[in-house]
Image (cartoon, rainbow, N blue to C red; front, side, top):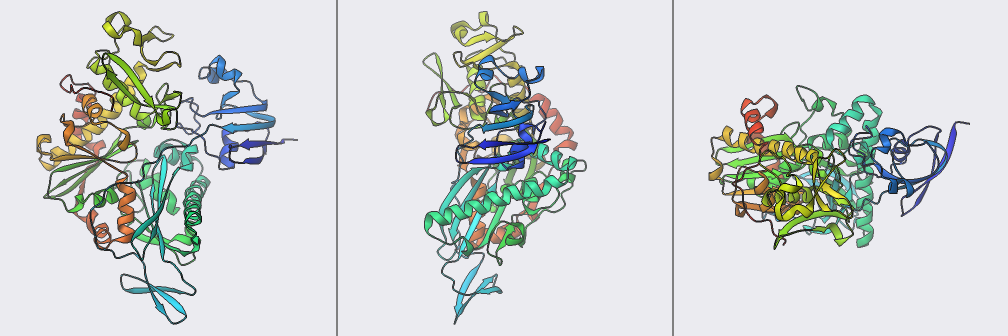
Length: 563
């Protein structure tokens, strides 16, 4: 018999699983929609899809062994993408409880929800923009939900549309991450197998609907009374959620089938249970500048701002906006997944145990972990801090070369060598958490893309960096970064960290504004019309700046202290 059975133990529940003999553990986890970390999408290149597993399984190949220590083997750790199931099995995916940034300050607006209701004798009539949409009986509440679909995490907000209040919030991991840490990996999966579009669409819609149910249960409300949703995310995420094939975004000329700014049936998409429910997908500026940036700009008031303000959402795609008195300018810089902890030797997501801060204080280098848990790896914010501290301590030169131990002076105890005798910076020797030359290169590539993209927008608008009054750092990842570290490594075209303003999840709160507010909803209709998009792949100016910004600058010398 080729059919075999086993158990997937998520910690919260045990799932009975059935598959064919020889299937990889990752394929089974995907089949049963079980979340696990797979930055490279199962291509066997990152070594991050670590699971605990026992039973009848294949022996590890030399390729897999290169990612596993002897202690890993003793503890039953394998890579899901390479471990094949040969008989009865029990899989225990790594715990992935992630911290999700939910809140942000927003501009004031007039309360005027997307759907309003009026009681008419034995039924309630629902209106949008003054037009009747549908009628229902036995109505108690008029609820709505705003959702920011991030590549890594999802933020959801349950709102009372009549009162204009947020009732509950929920942050969860994006279950699509089993198909890769970035949108390119997920599009690649769909390109190779079109049926994975509906699979990924169901994954995200199911988690939104389940989040809505959970929040309603917490508040003693009925999920069927959620009748409106505002959905934002990058352009690819919005396409997948709407069930629209996004693969044309991933190949030249990078054409998006739609830029949204329109309504869909939330019930037909599987987002909400109420058959009348509508879902408004936020407008996108371009294939790689999505509705999350539109909502973020609206939440922070930059869509109508006369100041010269740079808006940066740092992630796999560094989405950048610039507000000026002459209009808005946008671009998207392919930073890669290094900021998510992928492609970093000891990298991991920002879950408990990840080193999230590295600092230099009184001649000693220290660190803090997410949740104050024992260190098990390092996430994106920690990597940026670590590189900044290395520069400050003289352990890294402007080219990105790591100092040899005999060149490290007072910091020689923090230096070691890898198996090829190349120098590495040890964050924790006992737990073998370090930064190597390849990690530095990944950060150089990522920070150069973001900084060069910002400089290209400034050049397009005819503005000097010194003219910027503020630089807004948005997004969940951005909320964990430190201004001094960003300036020291040269992530941004300014050196004055006091100009940086961290606003948290402006996208999610912008979606709330569109759901509940008159002016934000009007802004959503016009924001794309007063913007100019710059495609960086065809910009000679960008390429020149990109090469320049690969270097670290000795001028950015602010102290990286704890706090």
